Image 1 (tube, rainbow, N blue to C red):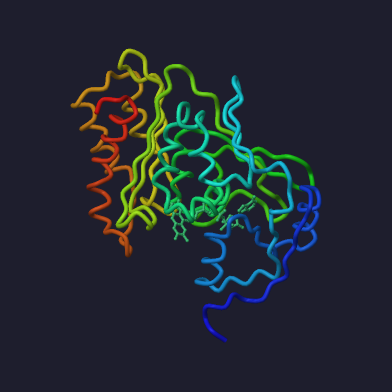
Image 2: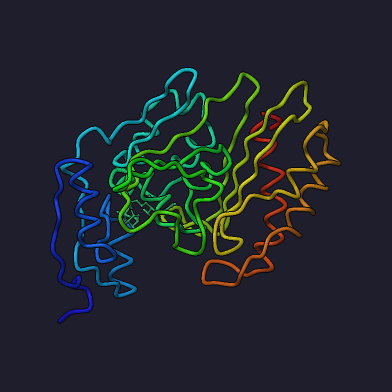
Length: 290
Ligand SMILES: Cc1cc2nc3c(=O)[nH]c(=O)nc-3n(C[C@H](O)[C@H](O)[C@H](O)COP(=O)(O)OP(=O)(O)OC[C@H]3O[C@@H](n4cnc5c(N)ncnc54)[C@H](O)[C@@H]3O)c2cc1C
């Protein structure tokens, strides 16, 4: 049989969230959830992962929303595609890091298929929407046999490709908190070609008042087995006026804080050098300095 033929599987097509959860529980450990399939099918093919069942989300209603709720924040349903972020003016205005991640994400074909949730659940350190969401903060809503469980995005990725989701839980929604009038955010990624995954990506979300940083979250991808927050570098920024000198210090701190590897997309040395430069640029982009 050709190596391009997917392994055999049974397709589960639940019509409601409770039915999906019951199927996950019934066949625990043998089911892969299929959203857009842009990671899952490639992963199954390359890694020869052979789940006995694929659980398709297409029969589930009400999970394809991207809604901004004033006073609460952004809600992204498990079936919402990356392209929907670009079609939503609230995302562009209030969550620029996420909008910019969606803008640079792959090609129109992939953006039309890929879900934002699939990006988070894949648990790749290169995930562009995931990088933006880590900087913006938020929660993943999981539905399991015991009911709903909320996991903070800071705790969601535990190892490469491994998340906090249990086998019998379905991820149903992403929640990103309401920004304030002083929140600024931005995202930048470097790639070999536009269609490729990131060599390095970075996102920042700051509370800024009269050029002084009150709070900050910095996330960086492709510099370790999971996406990371640069907490040491964040501490150096809080309470400070943003200046060229401070940006240089932050760049040096970021280079120390990360643990990149050599792979087909970049060398460790290149990633470390570039990390400082793109951190400086993303902060300038967020505060509109350039
Ligand atoms: C050509 C190409 C280019 C790409 N370019 C980029 C890029 O520029 N940036 C980038 O970040 N990624 C890129 N990717 C990777 C991929 O497109 C994204 O990670 C995408 O967001 C995955 O979403 P999906 O809906 O296709 O997920 P799927 O492939 O369906 O699923 C991904 C994983 O999440 C799990 N999952 C999905 N939804 C749920 C759920 N509701 N509950 C529980 N588990 C769930 C699946 O079981 C699987 O393990 C690219 C992929 C390809 C093939």
